[in-house]
Image (cartoon, rainbow, N blue to C red; front, side, top):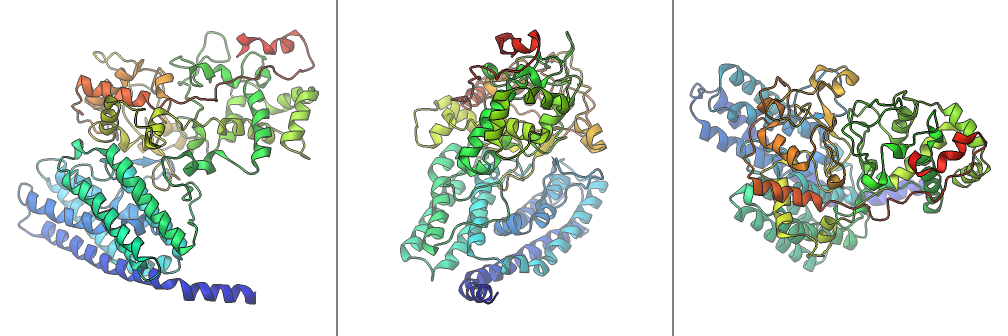
Length: 621
């Protein structure tokens, strides 16, 4: 106890200088934000603001609020995420939403209320005043929460800064939190300047060369942002390859000189990795414990994944719907059901990179791969079995018993371990070495000019990157990657765009018993998307061109369908045929199944009748 007290006392003596300076600067910046919010509120509450006047003045003052917030976003997002949501909450639905839906609040809502239409009606004006009053209180109460920051140490402070650089790079250049003004390049520069301000506080603790380098690196990055006046024309790929990597390494250099390792309360991102575009950044999603032991569990799980003993009739396996030859999908709009000539209700997603989701099934009804596997086994329309039967079958096989003993030494064979082994095999199916990934690692011949244009369109004009966040390209939200998003897009029954009908599948609505989630579906991953046609939860879109045509129109609402809660903007994207081709070319660069598609050479022997012995037939899986 005495040793701990002395060590704790030493840390409190050694480290608080920069932390306390950062906290003081944050309080000062928060005061600026409060002043800007109150100035905007004064404008809105003044008699001179009418539905048709002062739009430019309002927009200017709102921009001042947003820039003041962005300078301190690094702290809000990491240390005070609930406050960040109240100040700049996105008008999207997250999987953790409660049944009683709390609408978004803050700067984005204010932006939408005032600027979405050419005039502000009286109802919107009233809501605008209420939002500004709420925002002023939230910002004003911030000093009471400053102890969360002052109690931290250098390793966590640096983690917050590195995460903000990730956030700027992955969502800062999209419409994710700046939906109408599209001033995100200016705002991203402000956010980076906020990070630089904190790093400069270390001037007495790091080398002069690092201090000089800090100024140079941030000057070049922010200059590149600010010289681009057209957000759609901004070269996001160039920023990633020429500025993000340098910014990220710079924070690593601070950790190195200060002799600290990044620490964070958030387990989903490995900040020791040099770049968020490396699979190593997400290792906690797909590794667990001792690598040698993991390999034995993967071997067992792979055998089980391809083994029809999991099904009631020995005729189906996981691979029946997740065929490695088709990117671990099956090529059908809706997968074949257990009963002959029947289908299940939805399209089979790929298993590759599925471990990089934080929830499972299109309606996010399960929170782990293990739970997802259990539901498929017990579902009468899928494997139509139970684990008591499965365990009896496995116990009849000396080979399987030997594999279990190796995978789970000293443990009894149980349903939990069956699910764990299959889940660990699925966790091994990580494809993170596509041409896109290779390009970012320096192999500049791996992407064509069309694919680079496609990536920039994907992140910009086409707005794909506002929901499918890189580098995972699913709905798991940067920079913490600890929650996922739903979207309501008004999916169609078929790709007949001339005679559109709204798909009747209500998605997460019935599961969550929440009206605001009706027709809501988890945002899927797009890695290996070129291999996984047809598309959408119902397989209605046969090609990627179909998908882009649907989004280019503006989703179901733009087709005249009744989707009152559509989260996708119903405004047309205005993509040309050539631009759509570029985006498709880019998505094709996300393909990587290398080393993932092999099947077991044979399945372990089971005791039983002829149907059991025929498990090794190719036609079974």
